Amino acid sequence: MEIRPATAEDVPGVLPMVARECALHEAWDAAKFGYRDQPQEMYRGWLKSRATDPRSVFLVAQREDRLIAFLVGTVEAEIPVYRLKEFGFIHDLWVEPDYRHEGVG
Picture (spheres, rainbow, N blue to C red):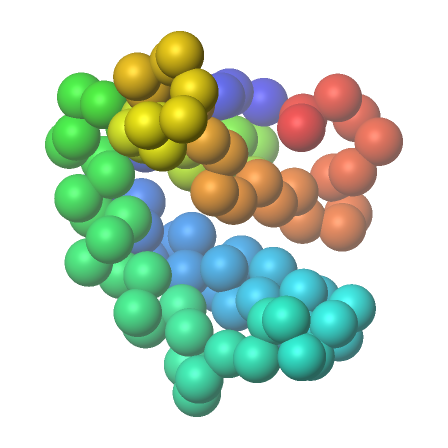
């Protein structure tokens, strides 16, 4: 298995995982995670931007020729009541079910 920075070319392979992640979140709490139709398509451009943004982390895990996991994180501005000016935020982390419990996450 290889964990590497994602590229814009990886995005089509990540989108089905985004769809599964959104479906899981919605099953957990539909009131909180009430997605519009095809939420993964809304991610398409955002993920491509994360792949080239130096203030983002977009990683994929690949086994042979198959993407099996992804992580997206960004640097965000802190609200002014705190001393920190910025913080790291993990937006999404997904590991395909068949590859869980192997230390990928």
